[in-house]
Amino acid sequence: MLGAMIRSIVILTGAGISAESGVPTFRASDGLWENHRIEDVATPQAFRRNPTLVQTFYDQRRAFLGQVEPNAAHHALARLEAEWSGDFLLVTQNVDDLHDRAGHNHLVHMHGELNAALCTRCRAARPWRGPLIGNPPCPACGQSGTLRPDIVWFGEMPYHMDRIETALAAADLFVSIGTSGAVYPAAGFVELARHAGAHTLELNLEPSAGTPMFHEARHGPASVLVPAWVEEMLAAD
Image 1: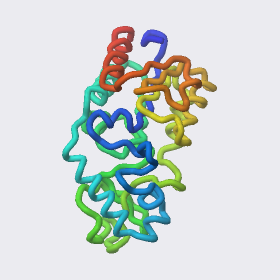
Image 2: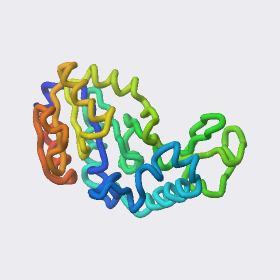
Image 3: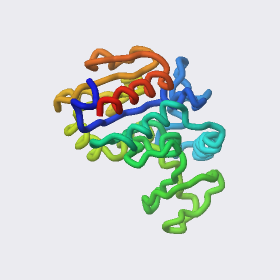
Image 4: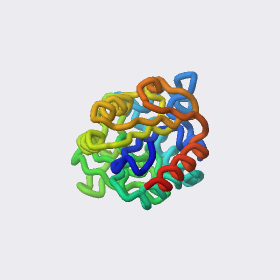
């Protein structure tokens, strides 16, 4: 399905698109995230139980962002947003800043951002690039010891769901890039889009759990598939 047939695009990206930049995927085959159990670093209970471990873990992830750069897939999607004549929304499950650095304006981070801190007292979220381990004061309320990574952990509600669902309901094309198709609510986006009448396309390194739900699937590295697909779309727009 090419550009002349559609006006509104919603794209979902996951860990696979950033993996080619060197960002570790969320869950390895052994069920661990960089040698940590998910339950120890990615739940509210873990933060209450051992805030030092959790803060240190995310401080390290935040600092690591300075060692990676957007790849060809990130840049191709930014080009599509800039040159597409219709509506465009990029939804990412990734907490890195690679899409931001590639130049997106119509972007939502549904699982939060490493480069942001959330105050557990006043609930204000602010950009944050330094460590949180030293209990710095909240920029909004001034309270110390209340900041946590602005990351959506297991058991918490993803951000921007109303905006995402509204966009999916109006989409002519839904594209999923580099996602496992196993984590909800994002795994259900293809069903919402199909129900609204959108064409659906998966671009993934290999077939995912959700592949059967898509009208079309292409498999291979994102840095190869995404630029080629963007060229097709812009040529037909």
